[in-house]
Image (cartoon, rainbow, N blue to C red; front, side, top):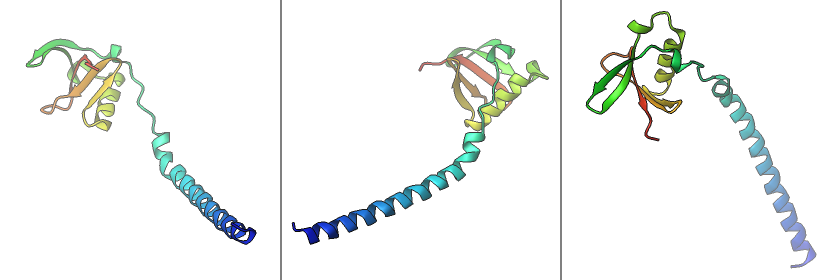
Length: 115
């Protein structure tokens, strides 16, 4: 490869690098704009120990049950419901598998997670 070919390849690679740099800068700008709501959304802070539960048993064994009726004016329970809403009614927190009953969205089951 002679000097003129090296020069042509050098110009080509510089153009490609510049183009990629511009693409990455545009992508970074887009991700920053799109990601703001996601980054700003905080996971609700609540304490599961402050939620009143009662022992229950179902087809899959023993679990704890929490209802809105037993947790009136309990902000921890209200935040748990919001968190479940954000996770399609199921989540794992503090080593517990937590789910919302389909028949009544204000009743929650809690049991040790198998994960």
